[in-house]
Amino acid sequence: MNFLAHCALALDASQRWPQGHTLRQGLLAGAIFADFGKGQIDKSLPLDLQTGIRLHRRIDAFSNQHQTIRDRCATFPQELRRYAPIFLDILGDYYLSQNWAYYYAHSRATLSQQCYEACDIYSVYLSVEQAAQMRRFLAYMRSADLLANYNDWQHIERATHSVLRRLDKLPLLDLANEAIHDERDSGAAAFSIYFQDMRHALPEWASLIAGVRESTPSTRQRETT
Image (cartoon, rainbow, N blue to C red; front, side, top):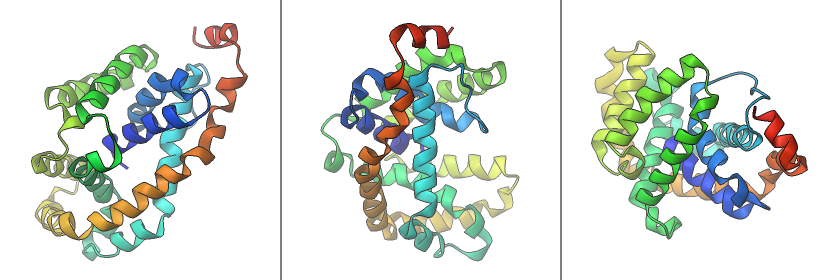
C-alpha cells in the first residue's frame, strides 16, 4: 500500500480498535514515517508512534502475501515483474481516490490535513537524516496536497518516475508508464478485493497496541523523553 491507503487504514484502526482514538495521531504519523526508516523500531519513540509504524509494516506484510496482488503482479511485463508490487502500491492510492466515497464518509482533504498535523507533532522524534528526508517529502506532499489528489493521474506517473530514479532504472520508465496505464482500468476490481480484506483484518491486529494499553500515562511520558 502507498501513503493514502496506509493513512486511511491507520484512521480505520483508530476508530475500530479499543481506545484507538487515543492513538490516532501516532497511527497517522506512523503510516507515513514507516517508509523513512527500516530495521528495528526505536523503543524510545512514543508508544502510539511505534504502534503506527508496526501497523504500517503489518499492512505491507499482508499485501505482499495476498494472492490477488501476486496475480496482478504476474500480468506486468517480465522486465517490470520485480518492481510490480511497488507500482501496485502506487496504483492503490489512485483506485482508493477514485472510489473514496464508497469506503469513507469523511473527505480525503480532511484526512490529509490530519496526517500533515500528525507528522508535524511527531517529527521531533526523527533522526537528523530522517528529518531532512521528511521535510523535503512533506513540503512536496503539502504543496500538491498529495493525499487529497491521488485521483490526478500525473501524481501516479510522477511517483513511478521517482521510484525508478531511486532504483536507478529510469530506462524502464516508458515501459512502466505503459504498464501502469494498462493496469489503471484492469486492476481496479482486484484492489477492491485486497483493500476490503485489509479493512476486515484490522480488528485482528489490535494486539499491536498491547504495549500502549498496558502503559500508564507516567510510563508513556518517561518513554517519550
